[in-house]
Amino acid sequence: QNHQQKSTMASDSTSSIDPAVAQSEFVSQTAKKQLRVTCYGSSSSLTPEPYLTAARSLGYILAKRGHTCINGAGSFGCMAAMNDGAATGNGHIVGVIHEMWVVDGADWSVRDGGAHKVFTKPASDGKRDGPVREMLIAGGDDLQERKKLLVQNADALVVLPGGPGTWDELWEMACARNIGLSTLPIVVVNVDGYYEPFAQMLQKAYDDSLIKLKPEQIVHFVATPQEAVQWAELQSEATPDIPQQPKLQKRTSTLKRSSFMSMDYFRRIGSANTSNSSSFDENGFMNEGSWSLPVWSLSFAAGVALGVGMMLARPK
Image 1 (tube, rainbow, N blue to C red):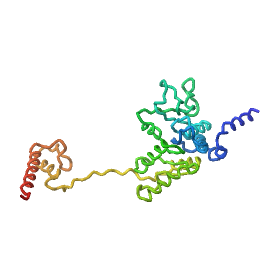
Image 2 (image 1 turned 180 degrees about the horizontal axis):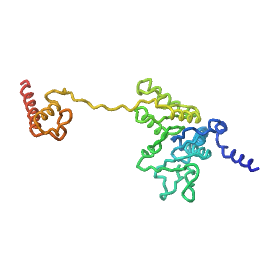
Image 3 (image 1 turned 120 degrees about the horizontal axis):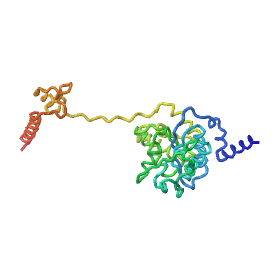
Image 4 (image 1 turned 45 degrees about the horizontal axis):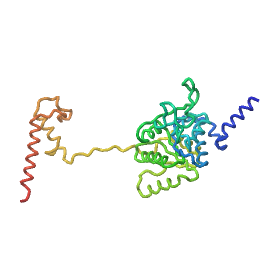
C-alpha cells in the first residue's frame, strides 16, 4: 500500500509535464557533465499554453539531467513555467532579479511579476538540503548588470518564446558571438515556428554579407526543449567553432626605421653621445625617460629647420 501511495504521488508530481518528456529515456538519465544553463523566455501572464508547456518541459529536463537552470526568476510566463518544471524535477535553480523587487531587504515581491514562489521558501535554519535555490540580486539604473549575472559562468543559453525583453537578451548574446566576444552556445526552441522570422533574418543578413559567420554558428534553432538540451550537452564536449576575437594591431609609423626624423634615429644619436650604458636597452636604443637635453635640443632644432625650409620653398 505504501508503494502504491508513493507511485501515485510520483505520478501526480509530474502531471503538469508533457508525458512524452516525463517518460523519455534521455530525460530519466543524469548527464555525465552537469551544466549551468541560462534560459530566456517570456514573463507575461498571457503567454500561450504551448509556450508554457515547452518551458515546463525545459525546466524538468534540465533538472532530471542534473543541470542548473538559471533564469530571470519571474512569477509569470515561460520563466515561471520553467521554474515549475525544474522544481517538479527536484533540480537546481538560480534566479536573477533586479533590486527593485527586493522588499525590506529580504523578501521578494510577487507584485507585477516579481520572484517566483520557489525562491520564497528557505529552510527555517537558513540552510537547505537537496537542490539549490539561489537568488542573485542585480543593481543599477537599468538591466545591464542583471543581464551580465544571467550569463556569468554559464555553459549554454536556451531561448524560449518571449517579447522584446527576451529578444534584446537573445540578440545581445548573438552579437557577442558574431564579433567574437563570446563563445557561449545559443540554442533557440522554435515552438510553433515562433522564431522563424529570426532564422530568416539571420540567413538574409548572411546572404547579403552583413555578417561573416554562418547563421548556425551564431544561433542554433531546434523544435523541442529536449533537442535544445541534447545540443547544449554536445556543445560542452566539442571545441567551439567560432573564431577567436581578432587582436588589434598597432599602426606603425610611416617613417622608415632609419630615416632622419624617426624616433629610432634620435635614440641612436643618444646612444652615441652618452657613456651611461644603463640608459640603453639590449638593442642599443635609449630607454624611455633617459633622453638628455642635447638630444631633445637636436630634435627641436631639426623640426624648426624643416619648418623654415618648407616655408621658404613655398611659391610666392
